[in-house]
Amino acid sequence: PTLAQKFRMEQGSEIGERARGLFPEGVIISTGNLAEAAAETAELVRAGGPSVLFEATFLVDEYAAKADVLRRIGDGWHLVEVKSNINLNQELVDDLAYTSMVLSRAGLRIMKASFLLISKDFRLGLGDSEMFAEYDCTENVLARMADFQPSWDIIRDRTSAASMPEPTMIPACKSCGVFSDCLGKGIDNHIFDISRLSRKKVDALTDLGVVRIEEIPQMFELTEIQARTRQAVVSGQPWIGPNLKPSLNAIQWPTYYLDFETVMTALPLYPETPPYTQIPTQYSIHKSIQVGIVDSHSEYLSDPKRDCRRDLAEKLITDLHGEGSIISYSNFEKTTINGLAALFPDLEADLSKLVQRIFNLEAVIRDNYYHPSFHGKTSVKATLPALVPEMSYATLNIKDGDSAMATFANMALGRYTDEETESLKKDLLAYCCQDTLAMVK
Image (cartoon, rainbow, N blue to C red):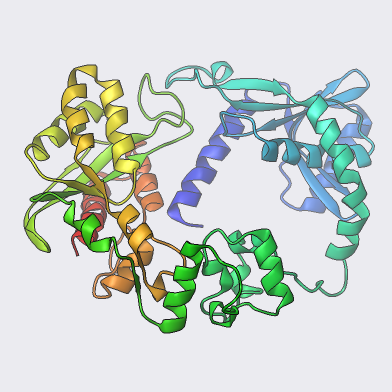
């Protein structure tokens, strides 16, 4: 797992532990082996033992499920899933429906199914009882269980078969984590590199045996943007739109290339901050007097031990003072500055002036330029290797925004020594600096 994944798992574990604190009579099934945990659970259920079980484990007909909290109510059970979300969604309901279905097949009578989610009102320093909000989803869970039941035998037979079924390409393959080792293995310029390719078009191309962009028939119907991608890949040359130069000519000089990094955690890092508040923690600014010529560089990194948004906003106003476009590589910088303006009304006028100067470079590239090596993406990480191959993130200790976020959060939680913290601060500044220098280049 990456540093960011580890951080999220650690927060999830802490949230789970604190949820268990709400049920002091509970007993945890701590056995690591799945079969042994299921046997221990079955024994406790039969014996009429503890009124609450944590991590109760069930194996039924090749299916496995673990219940975060399982509480006896009369002759039935209350199933409680603990999640780090603050809002309900269908995926969560489906998750709970699956667990309920397995437990029901194991002979348990599920009387109630609910979630413990992070309360939007929770603040740093409040107790565990104030951390969670409970949502009763019994009715929706029972309805989804009924939807799932017809698939029980089908999925069991396929997953327990001696050989894997032949995979079939569908649009969902595009976002699948193992696609490059499955149907996408060894295929350059896959048709999934074409943006917003509908299910109907994917099916039509699959029926034609087409998996590479170069193989798409000339008469096959594509949108204008999709056709640009095919043209660039087939010709091996970038597609350049007629509005590229006029769009770039709208930039006012000198320019200020701006990039923010933020932190957002389920459990607040600072007092009076709601869960999942996106807090800007640093920025980098490269000032250019003309194309490609850097005049100066300024940067800011918050003290991880406190909420520094006020300090950051004030220094940002100073560092961006003057005339000229502020170049960003998405709408994120505009959103972040607007958020600071809402937080500090006395700075709103100055911050709003900055927003009016923002120029979205990614939007210009997306609308007016496509390189065969973009592979359907226009993020900095996708465009930089194609346009500025001499620049790379590979040499940096922190290489992506998720790692930067997790690093800062761990610093705020005091998980590093003073020496490690000072070294990581340099790494954070280097990463953010790379993002703005990439825009310059």
